[in-house]
Length: 324
Image (tube, helix red, strand yellow):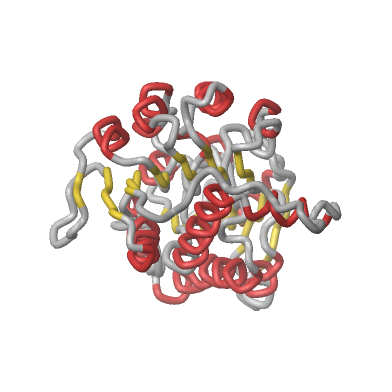
């Protein structure tokens, strides 16, 4: 009798390239996304891997008794209950590095757009307002001479720093620890860095320690000439305090690609002319998303072929197929 192919669960939607890459090797089981598992018991017992985007909680993990690996589409994996997976000997993978350049490029573009108001200038032109004797208003800020503080100094943060260097700005950073061999100034606290710089670029993940850390005090420390750019997680920003600071002139401008409750963007932020807003598109190019999809598939394929994955998350790095 032919050997049954391992079954891969896909809750909700995922990049179609993941399915294309896996379909000829595995049985694909698609289920409705939700907080509670929606998969028949017989099918659940066949599932040995899951390819997921966003939330994949303990209830889903417990509903799949033979689950071995969870392939997360994205470098951030806060939606997956990794601690529960690790406790059950289940490997979790993510997609680091393949999106570093795209996100870093977006951070620089968002910074320039926020400071120089290029999107507003283009819209002004398209509305036919550029006439003889009428020029678009001067932008209130410039990148020239700024002191940029990076909140988060992982792979993407370091790529952003490299891109900032040719702009001849001063660069500093705040992270959980100092990085050896780095020439930029290190600040042990976010507030201390905010007092020293006039621009913060946030690229921190969603963790208990980053929840609303960019609060009214940090924004006040940046001041009326200060600028906040966030390409990490909306989780790290107190959006009520941010809207108030922008509205009252206590913060100069903000550029946001991420929000606390996506896709819901606070109306107060949408209404502000000194807020440059993007719909979480930092890694949203076809080449980068294809590379992310390939890495999800390659991790699952490698697991079943070799017993090892290419990019396991640190919490489950020790898990191997012979442990199960």
